[in-house]
Image 1: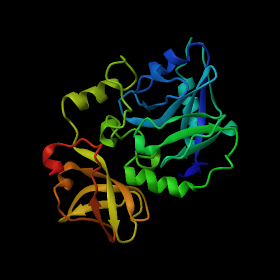
Image 2 (image 1 turned 30 degrees about the horizontal axis):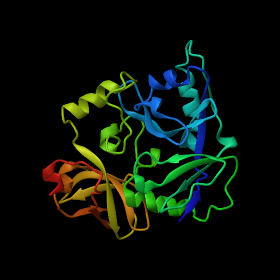
Image 3 (image 1 turned 90 degrees about the horizontal axis):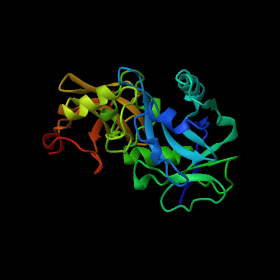
Image 4 (image 1 turned 135 degrees about the vertical axis):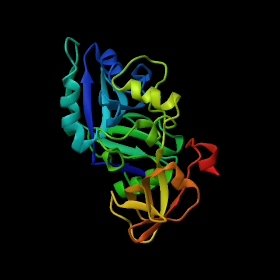
Length: 275
């Protein structure tokens, strides 16, 4: 029942009486659902509808706490602050005040921390924000990395390309990262058009890596044609951005390795690609 402290995760605080309305008009999911014990997975997009950042939104005391990439937290806080206008909110990087944890495999949620089930998949367990690393954290960040790769969960900029990735290519629909009913938000038009017109041509797919782990960005080839590229990976597991035709069973080479797509049960693909 592992619990891991994740030092590469940070926290951005959004506080003030307009905090819900402020985020609601900016991010891809319905933050009205956030409350103690309930988190929301969401993304901040560019005005053109491309990925810029993603995070889990948890409820603190009169504030919303965005569990995000620690290296990106200062820029995320700065970017959100640009949209404050007359909103009665404050936005700041609060990473120094929190230690982010993940627990899975039936690990009990510690008491006295801000915690909620991971909203992406039940198998992902829970996330917790504590004032300091928990003494009961018995797993490593690498253990969590292997677990999330096995589940097929993207990990921010390790797997997504700022100002290029479309949310639905990265599974945000199936992973409960998009609301289709809440109303307008920045980048909504492209996200909706991609879904309702069936415009997806590629997906971020979990792969088994047979051979040396390719570096991120290494092209994926089949019969001499480039059909995608490697993203993050570890210990024979990885994620690769692949064109849908790469999922028809042909051999995929990436550097010195062979990639074997592992389509998880949560991922919705056209019937032909699933066959």
